[in-house]
Amino acid sequence: MLSKSEETVMAKPVIRPAQPSEYDELLKLVTAAFVTVDFETNWGHAINRKHASDQHVYVEGGRLAGNFGMTPMTLIIGGVKLPGYGIGAVATDPNCRGKGIMSAMLKHSQDWMTEQGALVAMLGGKRSRYGRWGWEIGGQALNFGVSLEYLEANGYKQASGRKKLESDAELKKWLAISNRRGWGVVRSVEWAKMLLCRGFYSVYCTSGKTAFAFIVVNNRNKDNAVIEIGGDAKAAACLLRDQILSVPESKQVSVTHGPCCDSITEMLIKVSGWGFNVNPSWQIKIVDLYKTLKALEGYLTRRCGKLVPGKATLTMTGTKQSAHIAWGAKIVVSKKGSGPVVKLSDMEMARLVFGTPALDEIFALKPSVTGLKHIFPIPWHIPPIDGV
Image (tube, rainbow, N blue to C red; front, side, top):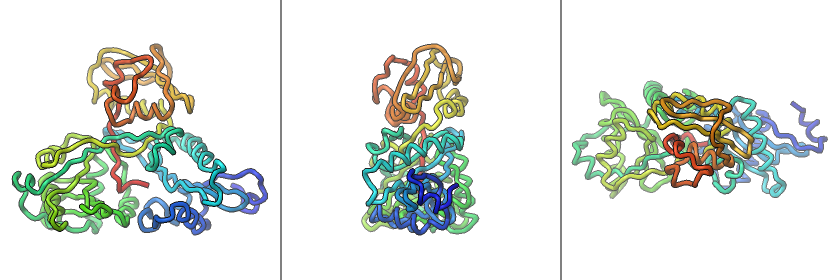
């Protein structure tokens, strides 16, 4: 790594991990770019002094002109763990905009993530801004309109002993549930403790001898929507009842759950007096197409069952990647093979593999490969509290 004095005299800008000594300057840059966001309060889990090197900075003339965070994040899909990164705090010094700095940083992120062995990358932000770099909206967040009337009609009338999740024992229970389900991201103890400090959200759990359950509440919404729920289904339902009663004159609450059929899902369907729907989760980018599909090969076989035999080569035209997929009694992913070739932009490939709607509702594939709609899109979801 070049010294700061060497960077100062170099004409060519440098993109590199931030140094701990640059944290204050980095925070000032990001705050100036976003204007209204209190990063240390609301995003301290992703941008903080201890993990300053997770931020990558664009250095020009010895000063920071841009930043983008690359927080290590392992995505869970069907129990399969896909190593990747959460991209956040993408910022350019307001005085340096219009020079292609963001484009240079995002190009650097692709190269760097590939070197690190990442398979996918997730971020929030404008689809129009990041789409040309391969990100696309995707995932399946199940949203339920849970009513007090339906909760009580189904027998959930008792108090839950609702309290804020604080103790180490409660933390471990929360992690045990979130890390063994088939969706979300892997949460370490350190990550979970930082999540509990986020200003946007509050985590509540049951107390006493009641079976353990938890909910994560979005404090930014007037109705305090529940953006994550888990644990014992009956105890979770009682937590939802107490959550509704905690908001004056409230009769219902919006609840988001991951794409799975479990006891929580079954409970939510019963108590959803206001209906339910499916919305996108985050934006996702495929960093390594072949390794991503290869890692999901077994899960896709279990999920799809026996299919009418077929095969195709999927090609990403932006980053020049390809993977061959064959299906029938099982799904087999390889680097090369015969059959029709489906060429898509990186953004379109993310939409095909990880999008939200049914495949035939997104776009027409050319050539048409009927079997792909029985395989894709792959369901996934990341709770907003993990957002970077």
